[in-house]
Image (tube, rainbow, N blue to C red; front, side):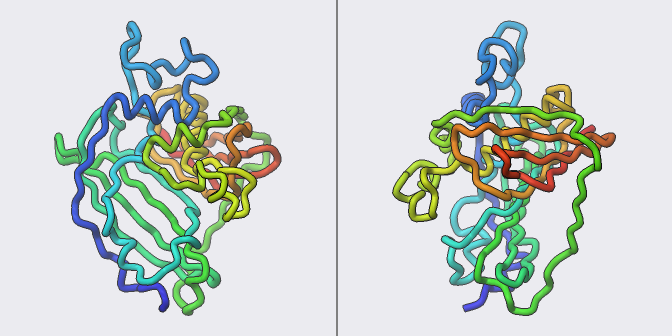
Length: 284
């Protein structure tokens, strides 16, 4: 049965969720904050009770917040094979700085489905509203490829042309990941055994469990925050990138950053592989 195009526009029921200071600390540690200098740099993200330091949340933390629970829009896609789903791209939009504790009311919808030939591309958007003031807090946009679900002759979607500047990167930042990085990051909510169970990872053709793509995304977001936003989350407005290769826990991530005013382009490497490509950051 082909993918159900009538799922476009279906919106989930509103779902409330909350987070607190401890959740922010756990996320920060999960994406490597404080690993290089645990008693100095990044204390505002790794501690809540340091003298003259006010705790802050990393902007990319919104990728683990605002879930709308089961029975959301993806359940209307029909009899698709979720084992063939690939998280292709991720975008986050911060409508205001992420607080260290809040309650949000979130809704998700499938904004479009494109025919990519060998796969269907499903655009899933989740918007979180701050229950304290009724204002939008953040929007997560996930681009999901369902392999084997394309080829019905539908719209392929907008043409994409992404070019990096023809010069050396303005910043190159290296962050080592820990051998147990995936075990730490999974405590933020993604318990997929692909990232923890060696036998399950082997079924996918991997020699050992791989790192979450959104963990690589968070490491990259940290690099961008410190390199071009003066470590100030208020200046970090939106970030998007394409997952292009898996990362093994323990590998070193190298983030290459090109700055052009308020628009910043980036790509992340592990060894000689590009693992996060077509990166774009919007700042203030």
